[in-house]
Image (cartoon, rainbow, N blue to C red):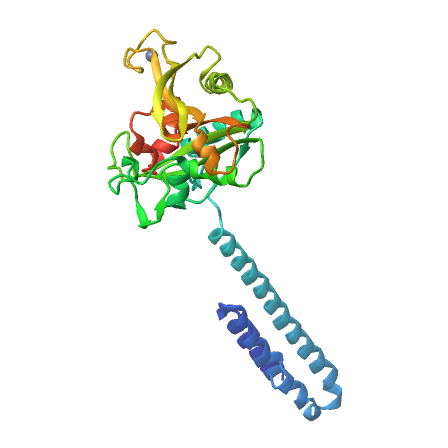
Length: 339
Ligand SMILES: [Zn+2]
């Protein structure tokens, strides 16, 4: 009996030593210690052992069981430790590897310039209003005193959707829509995208942005216009900036002017940036034409006002000394991340 038990023990220990996985250890446990296992079979045979030998055999069986269980437990612990170490090796993080950088977006130079202009006018009590980019011919031209035969209405210059719907060529229709609401006085700026049938070059694009301003109240004069735009120029280009008004013609204002500011690079002495003149043209403006007021239901005898329009890209190009407008639309990260 003792030999049989020794044999079982040897066999079990060898199988445990040969096991290379936890489930194999479990198979060994079942094969020897399970209900139908080899050691259990020995216990079942105890009835054939003479009574006086039973305690001794029982002890031997227990010793064998303990030996097999002990070795099983030891092997299991070793295997688990090994598995854990391998997992740690697999999951190790090399902190010396260069990090993968997420590129964080930022504001486009157009947006920075727009926010600057909005900040200045909101500071002077203006409201920012917006309107549709696809606009009725009436709002884009007719209500702005631009008659049907005006060259600006030519299909060469304007994108027509249908005969009476256009992609707006200016943000002035927003002014008309604001006046039509009939709430006076008015003090608004209208920024937005506009469209003209232009070829793309360094200073032209079929789609660009304008910011227009409109003030209507009692007793508004050209002096208010000059004072407002002079303050705007000083805030945008620096406190030393001077403005110059040159007579001009726009259908929707009378009188009309184009505004130059002293060159912020040379202070007016003349340099390469201002092409030697000392002045840089920045916007168009004028007193709102009485016809425009009348068409929007405002009495020109009682109310007067001024309007101005500035190209957003022009401001961005000047402010950041960019020499080609196309750079603003190309979405080249190497260019854009400089601002
Ligand atoms: Zn200059």
